[in-house]
Image (cartoon, rainbow, N blue to C red; front, side):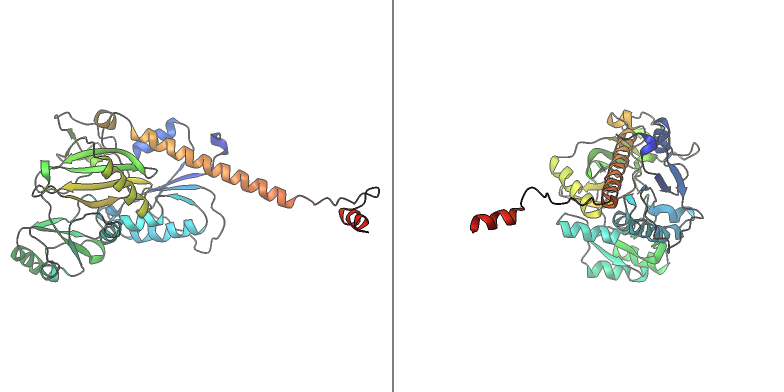
Length: 364
């Protein structure tokens, strides 16, 4: 691997002040140079067409709108497009981001792959939510959720069409940033948990079962505070005063079929590091994929829960990507040097006939 001094620039693009402390700590432990770029106040010149030879790790979250940074979501789309246009290697780039910030796009992707997902209708006016559910033939109970989600924000459950219609009449169906959302069949979870499968470099990394208190939809594993045995977990990615959310986690072991399907989802979405969540319907045992995440903070207290530190493997991968960029740049420089080298003309020998003349002599 190339020495650190020879590696291209590494930039971490992010907005949450706490989630990435474990990543920064591991990078610093290895003395790997990097630049932290918070999106707050960031700007770029679209006329800048200079070559960007560095590595950019996109750690932006669709839930930024819950922290007063709603404008950062559209801005990130433009920034990633600009960076890729300039040749930057972006981990979880524009394709992954566009999937991350649209639950409707996630369902379209799952349909294209032929994978099961809860039936839904996409809406932009809560008043018509009940009619949309009926038109789509959805089975109640249903949930509504903002199209741009994150950490269970704005998800509401309605047991009957009348409940949904009454909530819409009260203007109490939040659709979040952009005013677009889903009305989707609610799936009762077998075993009262969902499973989140994490990928790194597009390949299976680990899986966890996540148990949330009844009636809650925030299943962020980095915020989990308890193991299923009641052991309190160290939440290194959370602020010290973060509330305990009652989420419990344990290692899970999905079948190989699920692992391969999750990898296919990640490839189709352009996600290199992230998580895919699925649920087993307690009514009939059917598996449904329902959430695709390009942002993963990994599970809290991972060595205790899954037996290893995923941040170490994440930084291993980042180092390999940096080394690959450095190797590619070195090859490009060698090609340029070879193209720029002066051509030396070689005069034909006066003592030996050319091949053409020799052949002509033999023919005569």
